[in-house]
Length: 109
Image 1 (cartoon, rainbow, N blue to C red):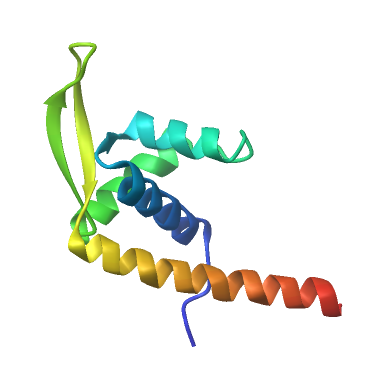
Image 2 (image 1 turned 135 degrees about the vertical axis):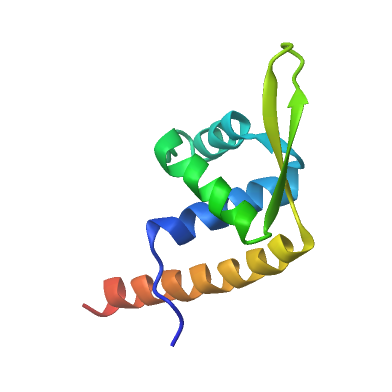
């Protein structure tokens, strides 16, 4: 049986998806993309996002590099790795299984 979905797996899926489609972004850009694309329904707080980014970096799913932004500020830009792309597919499958399960319960209860 697969590991159940948690808020952590949802953050992983969202972050990996954003990075795979938009390219390198800093944490603020990732959080803004999630909030904007969800029509303000989802807001990832710094206290959840940065530990998740650090964990994903340790797992080799993303890499990070310090760069100077257009505003002349230093920021870490995150990029998805090949391993991260493989993990993204796994997370998508897990999410689809979760969504199917919830839909079945809502329909059959």
